[in-house]
Length: 376
Ligand SMILES: [Zn+2]
Image (cartoon, rainbow, N blue to C red; front, side, top):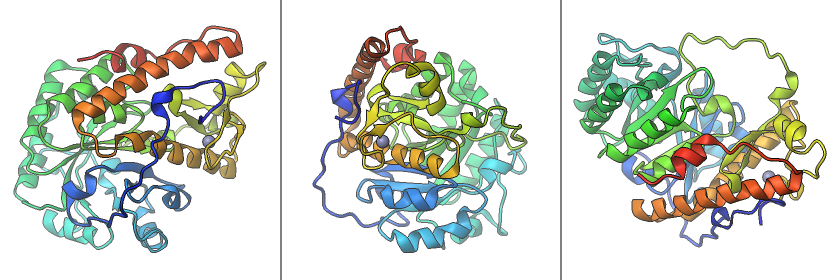
């Protein structure tokens, strides 16, 4: 049992007795296989030691990722560490400048990354919806490389998922890539917020024949994994589960309490704001308790907005994500799909459990109900 009140037996961690694994540095396919990645930003130093080295890794993001990586590697020598290039956050791709290079050539840029990163990532800029000229310009340059240590990054605006023709174009370009693809979507809030986009997202993984990483995902990364993704990379707080547009400026925070951590409830396949649980679910009912190594039986809605409490919540997310992933290690796509289907059915069952406990009805997450619970 991970939590009180809600129980989804299919999301319980699987104890794994696997041999220690070395970091397959420079070999993208070997390193990406059978690992859950964590998108680590501000909290990277505290999250890295919590990640399971035998089936995990971290993608470090943010302006200070390059300066932090050596220290994190020294403290966690068995953990794969990949640094995301700045271009994914800060450059707009055009057909003449699809990349933001930090060296004279694309090859030299990737060589430079390999000094500190276990794999290189093409420094692709953000690609506006339907700008297939920029996307194809990037593809052409990357296909000239012939490297085994490099992922072709495609940071695409979420609008790519809203249009049937765009989805087809995106799939076609991915399928022409000679390198594994690191696919991520750009939006100021939640890139895959609608049922329509969640269906399109699944379709991309179903119809691509090249290894694709579902990068900066939320739990939809597991839907991707069940439909053909080689791996997913999921962050412990909202801005690591999306890319903000390159020209995005964060507005003032109206309600400080909204900075309370968002908590992964594996049994529900859902990430819920602490404030929401405190105000909406447990205002007059006993809160859910969590028995993970971070919470040790404490209330799951206890954490507030100060930095130490946020870190605690994000650490809970890291260990619970690895627990959820542990049952996927070693499975092929068909077995992953079966497991995901049972986890989704179990997550739907947690709603009546929670409703009985708090004494009122709850809205089921529409993506869980209308996308993940549907076979395709
Ligand atoms: Zn916990």
